[in-house]
Length: 259
Image (cartoon, one colour):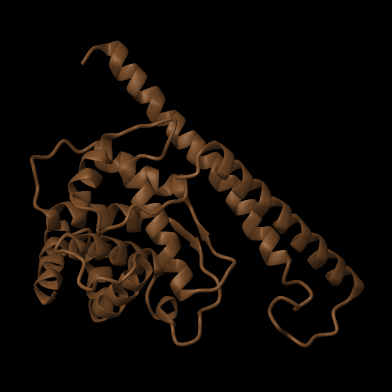
């Protein structure tokens, strides 16, 4: 590879990171707008006698949220309708594609690694918590670039996912979670930056074995995987803290054996 090609690749990587950061800035702004929308207690279903200022702030925040949501949806629909589509873990060969996409940079679309783990994180967080919540795409990309720096020999699926799980957990892609949904209090007992990447990684590992139920959709599959690996999350958290990728890979292999 020539210096010119390496420079172009670096510029593309920085451009992808900058674009993800800009999108995250808009998401963060909408997160705080949605938080302000609860100022009068109306959207939370609370019976409160809010002040005039609280009602005004909440009303303006709800109006701003509707406008920002409409603007984002319209832009995506006109420019790139597939932008929000989750790459299904049941897609044949997705594990290999995600692995090879670690070094991919695209100015037109998210690299597949970013697409899968960012959007899977949103689906998983949405299953366990109510809005507003905040998942940061540029931190997923930071984990991808960290993985891309390591020129390692071909690895097994569990070895690759162990490195991914460690990188994503350390990147802290889940900035905020909302209130827990009834009966789904996972984030009150386990750090979401361990639980969410673990569920996404194990889902990718399990789905490679074939879709277990014909009518099972991705969201249902994430929920089943979350329930299945719940007893293992504390162990994974300990291994992540110790940065022991070999032990994480062994734990993932043991989890796969259960399936």
